[in-house]
Image (cartoon, rainbow, N blue to C red; front, side, top):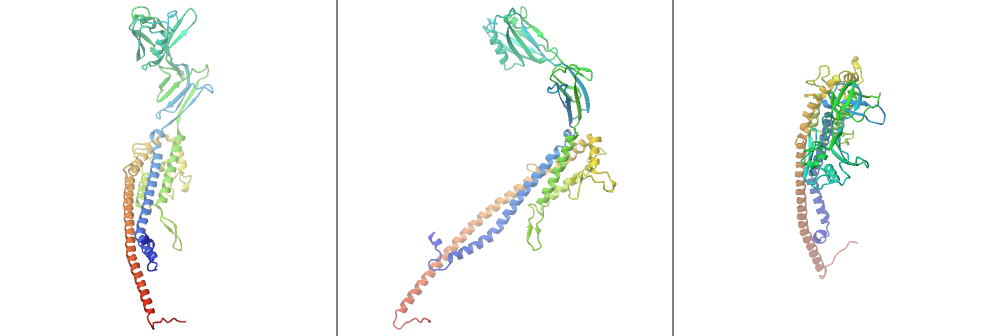
Length: 486
């Protein structure tokens, strides 16, 4: 590298600076276009990503205006006493608006079995001297426990409770300490009349632990039968085998948790959830207007000052027709009649939602030209034509479906915008290759210049030395003098 670092040392000429100047000029010539292209492609890639994100956000907001969300019902339960929950309720979006008075007479319960008095002396009493099985049944559920010879009452209790097939039978041992001795108590979680726990066996020694004996007398007796839950809904008695009442009122689910106090009933009110619908519509408007702002920023042209200088750079997608085409399609949907919607509410205009001069959605309060304001139409739709709003937005050919059809082709994986991103990234890779090739060319160009100017430097140095030698030789000849000006 010494020949490069000291280029011009032989001749005393600034050859190194000359080479650097030539190389810099060549580099700027070659790289300026590549750098500009890289900047443009990166800006376009960012712009397409921002457009895709804004479109996806708007579509997500639109999808909240489905039939299900717009027909959602609000459910309010008035408990008989504060601080305790007696009833819980949910309603499908097809439930009718209504109100009811509810009295809970009893909760659904499972059955309870007890062994006979003095059947066992204590928890360590052996229940059988030979192997056998106990089968537990309640309703349509069952499981079986193997009883081995010499098993104690406590070991049986543990085996019942720990069985992986146990559907909700709990075994306990009560040590009464009196004339009743030690008792086995079985409770079942299976509720409803007719779903009492039944225990059968395959070994007569286990009859003391069964309700259905093999040969002798059953040792387990029913101390509490399974029962239904019972409520009075506006004075009408209704029962359920569980504490959940499905469709006691059509499309409404009630869960009872406690019996209501005497003279204090619960209240149930089901209504259309207009507040949620209004909030979702306002979010839809806000999201679209944010999309408009984003597209406007991305497609903004360059702003020039009076002196010709740039006062504001253009947007990342300035001059690109794609964003405008997308927005034109969306605005076309907004201005059209929605197929399948109610005749009196079949467009955004009928809903009170219009486009202003800036191209943004609004619910106008203006009554210009004596017309009904957008706000008046909007409130009227919510209060008098609520169910038709769902058809307008969430119908089979509603606004949401139409928007999804248009926007998804741009935002989906493998869609138009994804393909555009792939194309730009491919161009960036090619541009990177061009940059690397240009760098190699510049390196080679510099090396060639340095070799040439190194040879020139050597030649000039030799010539300067020869000149010096000639001058020295001449000056030593008799009569040779050098005149110097004074």
